[in-house]
Image (cartoon, rainbow, N blue to C red):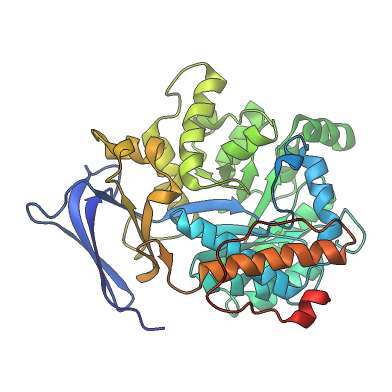
Amino acid sequence: MTHTAVDLAGIAIEDLDRDPYPARAHVSDGELRLEPAGPGQGAADALLLPGLVNAHDHLRSLVPPSRAGESMSLVTAIAAANDLQLQVEPDDYQVLTAQAAARQVRAGATTVVDHVYPLQRQGLLEAVVAGHRAVGIRGYVALGVMTRGKAGLCTSVQDVVDLAERAADTLLPKQQLYLAPVSLRQNEADDYAQVARAAQRLGLRTYTHIAELPSEVEACVAEHGKRPIELLYDAGFLMPGTVLVHGVVPDDREIDLIASSGAALVYCPTNHLRFAKGFAPVVDMIDAGVPVMLGVDGMESIFHEMRQAVYAQGQARSVPGSLGSAQAFAMATRTSADVLGLPAGFDGGDCVRLDTSGPQWHPMADPVWSVVHRGAPADVTDVVVAGRPILRDGELVEVDQTALAHEAADVAQRLARRAGLQVPHLWRPTAATSPSQHDQQKELS
C-alpha cells in the first residue's frame, strides 16, 4: 500500500536527557524525519512521543471480559480458557490477534511482545504474525513451550524449537523471536535447560513467566529445593537478552542473579493488581541494575501501566514517588527499545501523536508527568511504525476497525458454540462497512 506523506506537529519528548521542544515530524517513503519547529509551530495542543512498547501480552482474548470473571483467580482464569483453546483454528487466531493489536495501536503502542501459546496446531504462528501485520504493529513473538496442562494443548520442547528454526529469518527476523516456556505451572523443570541449549544453538533469546505467585515459590522449593529464579539460573536459562515476566516474589539473591546474568524484567502492574498477586520489588531491581520494561498483559494500555507502576510502587514502599514518572516513561520507551534491540527515540521511525487540547492536560507544566498521569488511548491520533503511518486521525490505516470488531465477535461466539458453552450475547458497533471475511458455512462450523 502506498502511503501519502504525513506531517505531524507538537511538543517532542525525544529523550529524557533532552528537554521537550517544539517539533515537526515529516513522514514519507518509509522514513520519519524530526526537525525543531519554528516560532509558533509547536503549540502545546499536541505531543510527539517515541513509540510505546508493550513488552508482554497475549493478544488473543478467547473469553470476552465481563463482571462474571472479576473474582476469578489466575489459575481459574487459565483453566476457563482451555476448552476454548482446543477449538481454535488459525483463522480465529488471526482475527483475535488483529483485534487486540488494533486496540494496542489505538493506545499508542508501536511494538508488542506477544507470548503465544498453545501452539498445538499447524498454522497458528503464521496466523498470529498475519494478525500483527494486518494492523501494522511491530510484533515480536515469544513462542510458548507448554509441556504440562490439558491434554491436546501441550507440545514438546522439540516441537517449538523446530517451529522456531523454520520461522527464524523467514517468517520473522530472528531478533523478533523468543523461545518461551510458559511457566513452572505449565512446564517441567528440565524444559528450561533444553530451551536454553536450543536458544544458544539457534541464536535466539529466552522468555518466560516466573516468580508470579507465592504458591509458585512454595511449590518450587518443595519439589526442587530451590526458588524459581534460582532454578532457572542453574539451568542456564538466564543469559543476556533473556526476558522474565512478572517477578512479583523474588528474594534479594534472585534479584542479584537476574542482574548479573544480563536478563531483563517485564512489570505488569495492572495485571498484578487485578489478580491480587502482590507488589513486585521493581525499585530494588532497578537499583540492582535490572532493566525493567512494562507489559499490558491483557489489561488496557501502556498509559495505564505507566501510572499504575508509579502508584503501586509508592504503595508497596509507603513512599510516594518511589518510582518516578520519568522512570515509568523510560520503561515504556528507551529501556524497552534497548532490551529489544530497537533504535532509541525517533531514530527507528516510530512516533505517536497525542491530542493535548483537552482540559485534562492543562495547565501543562511538565509534559512527561502529563503523559504518565493524564495520557489515555482516546488522546492518540496518529501512530507511525518504521516510517509507515498505521493510525491517522484516530482511524486505522490498514484495516476497517468496525469490520474487524464484528469478525472478533463472530469468532468469540463461534468458539463458544464449538466448545458446547453458552454463546455470549455481544454488543456490536454500528454495522461494518465491509463484509466479514468468514462466510456463513464457517459461522455454522
